[in-house]
Image (tube, rainbow, N blue to C red; front, side, top):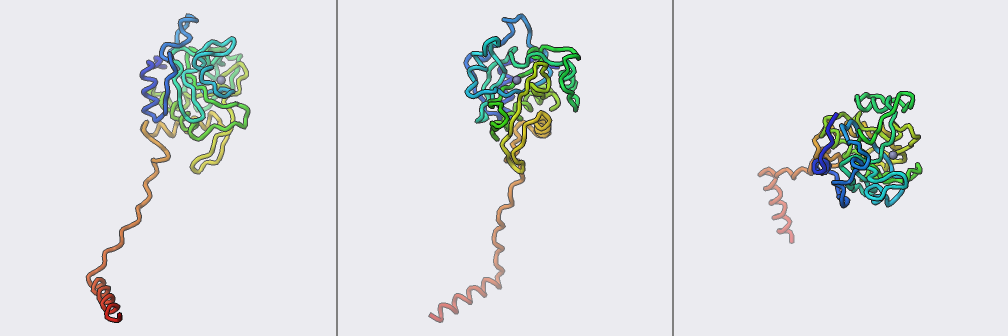
Length: 254
Ligand SMILES: [Zn+2]
């Protein structure tokens, strides 16, 4: 359980985690709190989404969609890996969560049951941070390397700050009672990892790995440096004399 972070703090922890950030005009005060009479927080989890569209930043941050007023997430994550701040308040992203699934994230269980409406429901917008990651959501559009890297960092930054484990990071499809399927789609391969299908389980594994390291950790540069080529061994005096002797002999022959 945690009190929601201030706008300044939310931005600061992302930067500290190595996320490239931008700020959508008005993001600090935009939220679905006053309009609904509801309060954001305490927060218990991060909820991950795909936008199911392209160029969706303005939709997420300012415009919303018919029947769903903005903001539609706290953070919009572009293909480039740029995270744009959209809200620090209550956002319309999670909808109704199944209690059984929500409880598994709240209690940081290592397994997360399929959402069951029969277990009861929770207003997910009150209790979760939302990340909308740009992807068509058609199952073939690829999450770029930069995008996935930033995605892991954003989840880790929030967990690190609020002292949560990676099991606090869920996906819309893992909590929704409204038949949501996001996020899904292939992630661009990197390192020794070939292209792989996005799953909440893999995301949590990558967030957990990140949390073992300081916020400044960058996997691509954290490998031990390759050993520089060793300097040539200095010649012994005897070898120097022999070499000199050889050159003199060569000169004498000219
Ligand atoms: Zn979603």
